[in-house]
Image 1 (tube, one colour):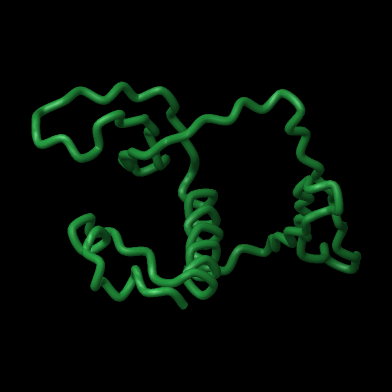
Image 2 (cartoon, rainbow, N blue to C red):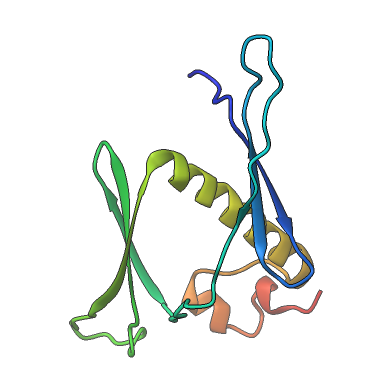
Length: 131
């Protein structure tokens, strides 16, 4: 697999805005340029999700998000998908790396995130022990 010649530096500005500065490899006999991308989140609409489904095609990764009002129900239920995110595999891999780092930092600070609900609810579970 060939290495991509672009690099991404992510920095948080003091106002909380995320700035990405993709660097490009120097052209023959020239210097690489830095391009500054500032995100404008002034019209952003936040939503909460406790359910997701990941599917894809050879060209894209598709992530559907939904709110399951009864996540512990033992009956069949229909959960309405209200957001769909479609991205290429390069962006999906960068998202995967960012999520992996975020979870790692969270677990280092607050303990392991237990995905098994039965173990999570058990008072003797190691993940319930304070760090």
